[in-house]
View 1 (tube, helix red, strand yellow):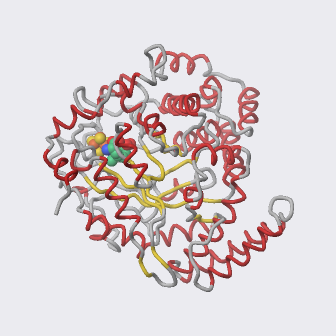
View 2 (tube, helix red, strand yellow):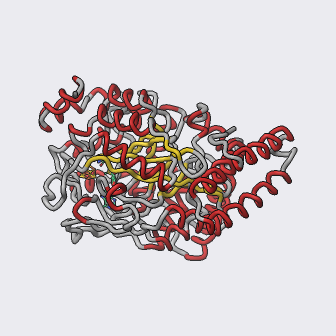
View 3 (cartoon, rainbow, N blue to C red):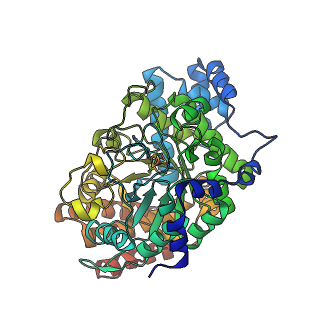
Length: 509
Ligand code: SAM
Ligand code: SF4
């Protein structure tokens, strides 16, 4: 029996729905003197004016970055313009140090869960665009969402998901909230404990504040909306006028509306390859600045997707492909420019690329499928079908393999979701991160959640390497008592680890 909301959703045509969706007043309230915060001409001229900064100036920009404050836009323009490989290496080395200062040696893993491929938009670069006849369109039923989440939580061992949607009345805010509730309801018996998803992030189209409140009430983690390109002319060229996504300011203020709806963890991103990457980095920093100006709080994470091939999608018009060297460098620039935010690189990238960035990024996905229903259908097959997915992936290795690789590189793979569940979100977490305090909680929780994962999901080989890294981490923590950790914290940590080893689960600080 379908409820009233579901019936109302089904009855709407895409055209009716588009008309009721965009609220002009939910754009206008954020403008300053009728203008948004991206001034294309100002960005271009700042890039020109700061194109030949001296090495001394770049070094002084690098040293300011350790204050963990959003970077001045002229400094960003100077930093992205560095071409000298040796100077770029200095920026890269600083990016590693800043990651260590704010996030230590932790990397968080998650998986994307695609719930619907129906879309009313016509983004030129995306396999899901409405005029692409070669895609099998599907929206998962709630039972299918649960089936997918059960594979992710019970077989693979993920604790965090990002659920992903095309923009369509069949996958509106009510549907998304229903997906979240269904996913959170899963509790599965696994090897030594319980399989469950503890944080559901959402990557979906911009919404009205009243719709975003529904996601907030359903327990959303982070709300992600990527601007794709901040460059207005390019934005218009790749998102046809008259489509919902063609509305640049509606998208630009999607995260402002989320904050006003009470969702205080929001995520920015740009799709690299559509326009000059230097401009996009400047745009991301200006986005963070406007969020800070308005809400006293920047983005929780920054994502850097790079264009990938998609089924029946022509890319001959692309003139701004980002080379591997520039991609690596832009990630390092973002680490310095928005130093408090998490930085996400996904499996669109090849393993070698992600590995080379693992000391700079804070999150990566693992064992990902971006097809609709792909976890239940293709688990273990490790194949990709062009006709059911948005784009092709570069890294399809299992979570176990990825955890093993990260651990062998010296990272603690954190499955922690405690911050979100104890109210350490938004400004509270950002202030703590900037001041270096969150590191304490996170360091301890990372150990506990990593141990829990190894007990429940790790292969013998991965567990061996993981246990060694945890032992090393415990020694480091012990050596920092009482300077950074109290005796009581240490005592609690030791006991909690033993409780996990004897079968208890979900213990956190
Ligand atoms: N449909 C919603 C939207 O466009 O905001 C939600 C998510 S969309 C399925 C997720 C993201 O995938 C987009 O924001 C875009 O950055 C990225 N994407 C689209 N086409 C891509 C491609 N060919 N290669 C890599 N990333 C792509
Ligand atoms: Fe639809 Fe999003 Fe793909 Fe654009 S990027 S066609 S909105 S799924």
